Length: 287
Image 1 (cartoon, rainbow, N blue to C red):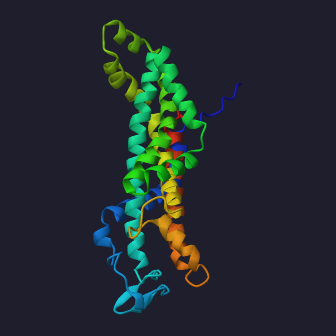
Image 2 (image 1 turned 180 degrees about the horizontal axis):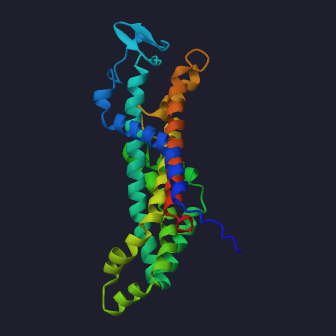
Image 3 (image 1 turned 90 degrees about the horizontal axis):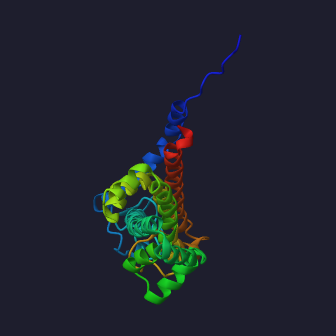
């Protein structure tokens, strides 16, 4: 009598993964809602200074202002600045991911489908960009263009589009050999129609995974540039700028650097774990 081992399906494992990532989905949702509803959520104006209430610890009341998470060196409410800082971080991350994703995916599909000279030119440019550390390229570029919200978005998109191009290129090489794609080309369909109608829907899963993982990296890059004074400029609230200021008051006002750092940690951790779960779900080897 032959004993056949029971087949283990992926459904229970996916349910376990969903339960594991559910708290981080909730955390990510809270950050998004806080960023969208910042004017309604923030208890005070993040730019209003109160010099009599500077460097107050969490829970302090000064001049009828209740500093739930403390105040900074200019007496501004730290909680309000954290709320508006979330809006800046998420806006920069989302904008740079969309811009770099669109440009990189389009160029990658063109290179993978056209082949020949076009493929060689695009992929050699990709290799040049990938050969330089992204953060170093971002620092050099923003130092030339100047700091600011718009420039930060442009710089981050400029430094990260090659990753999307590389993934889209590899996926397009596979999809382009499928019978239905070759049949569409044989029937006279234009390349742009084939790319948008047949190739793009089949590579969106891989692109979505890259975009999710890149989102957390963009948050860190924005914070790093602001920390160095090359990102969002004062008095605009930014977690990276708050960390830069807080390092000068670590011994006397620990909360200025602690809470922005905690927010960065939670946001990046949540995005990365969500990206890992999305990758597992879209991986055909787990089905």
